Image 1 (cartoon, rainbow, N blue to C red):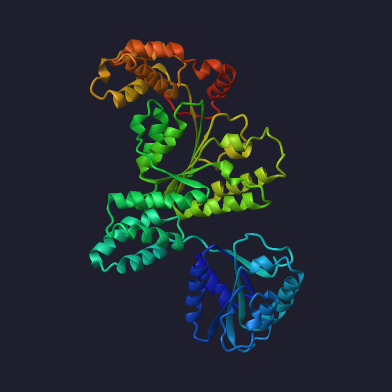
Image 2 (image 1 turned 45 degrees about the vertical axis):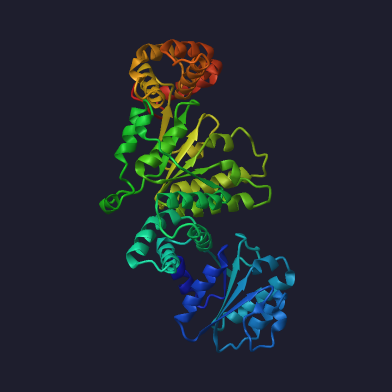
Length: 493
């Protein structure tokens, strides 16, 4: 249910206490004021620790810096009058036994009158004594409609024509998803100093400014110019992705297709898992958000779970998008044991529940180097649409990989290299190792002030020991699992 609608219903039903988790006090107050204004008999009274109540005609100036006195003010309020009381940061006083007791006593009186107490806070947990008394809500990040309204308000202040304002709002609104209203105002205000008009440079600067806020929210915006054609091999995976390239379109939704959940890309290091995640976002024209799962974990009890919920909120507000979870096996390793008081299990449970139940257009791309260490809950059906295994490239795939990398550095003369022989000679090399071979050959030739040749690449191949040789046991083990049909092969060769 939409937040505004749900809060309105709770207020109309005279719910005594409502606790709302948010960092956007001003936006919440605006929403509550809008609900109160719709009912002329409903008064709104706000309180904070420094200023007390905004009730000029009362003798309750001592509610300043006195949360218990603030509750007594509510208790003494006229029972026949309709009132909403918005208490800011009041969760900080839940540790005071007198405040807890007063809330429990006050709830009995509020049940008999049309008074509603809304507590705004940033802590996502409630004391056990209050859980059965207080309705719990989370204020989501602004939706597209709220963002567009705010953008219209900001751009209209620049005295631009209606047509230009409308165009600029259309360009910015999609990029603004995942930001709070306050963050959006700060970014637009900063960019307005240099330019009033939105162009390509403006959009690039907007993304850079947005990244500063998103990074503090455990996520990183990744720009990607990689296309699927720049990845050699993995034809089965490419076909799977191309089949679903319009899955987030309005026509797909009207057809009745559900949004695809995501992929788990499993494979040997250097086979292009991360590159594929970037290519998916670019090919589908979606924002790519990268999650470093290690950032979710914090030393304070309960903070890791709160970080996970915050991450989910930002990702869903940024939808449609691609969420890239890199090396998920390094964090959720079932062999590490429960040496963190169960924090990893709780974070994993929250993440898995979201993976299964999410309805937002968020496509997950998780990468892992080993399936042996992953908990069974991650790889079971329903979490991801498919699990693809990216093996070491075959000879035809190595040809394509050499061709891709040589075209990048020698777009006019790449065909002069003996790609067929290089592919044969580089057996057991991954895509990343082939790229390094080309770079190494260029270094060898550059120092002698000449262009590099096929012979330089062969010499470079001789100097590099591939991971498939140095870590043979691990590579062979995962290849055996793939050969048994445990997961789908990304390559047809």
